Image 1 (cartoon, rainbow, N blue to C red):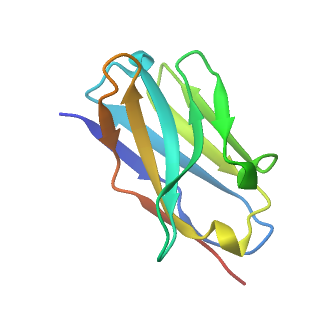
Image 2: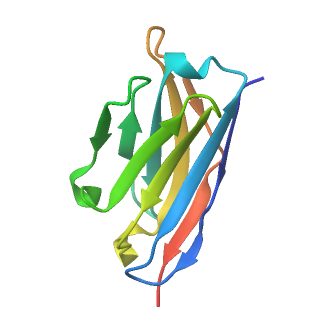
Image 3: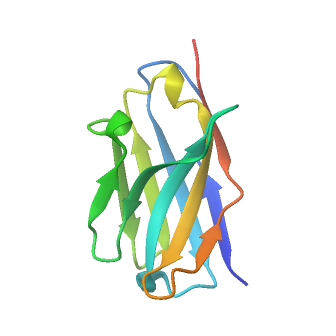
Length: 117
């Protein structure tokens, strides 16, 4: 059974930092591109960052220079380091795994991030 379990969300003040983690099980992790998506209230889900099994990364413009995605292919875990957080970063953050060949998608349950003073 495939499981993607996110952790690390919470309430943080503007300018603060959080580190999200997503632990994957039930998949051959090295065959998946991993991504972090977010969905704010009333908005569509958007891709925040992704990382291939080889370590190539991609970011949405609004988080470039502030967020860093990384992965540990031994621990089957992907991380999202979020610095200089802004209120507009407030959203539910979801971990995503996409098979590099079949394009099969798996989603985590999400973790809430709230940036507020």
